Amino acid sequence: MKLERNLLEPHDARMYRQLGALIASASGSDFAARMLRFVDDLVPVQRLDLSEWTVDGRQARVERVRQLGSAGVERPCASGEPGTHPLLRDILQMKDPLLIQHRPPQQGGDLRHHLHQCKLVSCNGDRRWVIGFHRLPSQCAFALGELSLLKSLADTLLPLLEYHAQRLGPDAEQGADHADALRLGFDERLAQEAVQLSSREQQVCIGLLTGGTVPEMAQRLNVKSSSVETYLKRATAKLGVSGRNGLTRWMAGA
Image (cartoon, rainbow, N blue to C red; front, side, top):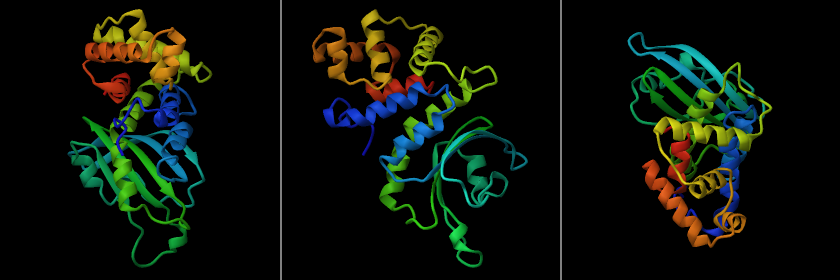
């Protein structure tokens, strides 16, 4: 399953409402909780950790780890920390997004305290953005199909994490309305790209980004659904992307 599939079909409405809520929360403190809720509907996970690593490729080490949020059950142990990650070399030398699965030790140790873990990782220069997915030791390990689905989410979740990292700072307004924050962010992105959209094109983009459906937007704007789709196509063409998922990645700065 890919997020680009059948974007306008009615049965995708709930997923895109959750995705819209996730995008709208990218400047807020509940971003991790909303991402966990979104992912858990597709692949069951009990915990999610978000972090930004600053690496030194020449020294083959992680210089700094910035925690960007977490949600779900408490982690019973501190396994798999950045400095001792078994695939640290791959993470340091990566050029494309990675999906990394953690496997518990085959011998020794109490396996009851080892979470089933996998990570999505993206990179830009000396920065790595990491989404960690965890299951309790009592749960089954991630199956191949589940890992494939998580990897298919990388193009959506990792750019959102980078956007979250950019927006998260000491002056961030944690109590700001998510929809208002998204509108401000959308206007900022348009100014950065020097792109001009019509009023209707902007309304459709923001409405879809905040989780609205095409029929809902048509009713809100008092136009046909086909007109909403036309506004979306015109807007995404100006932005140089395609479809609703492309709009999401553009908003995240990917």
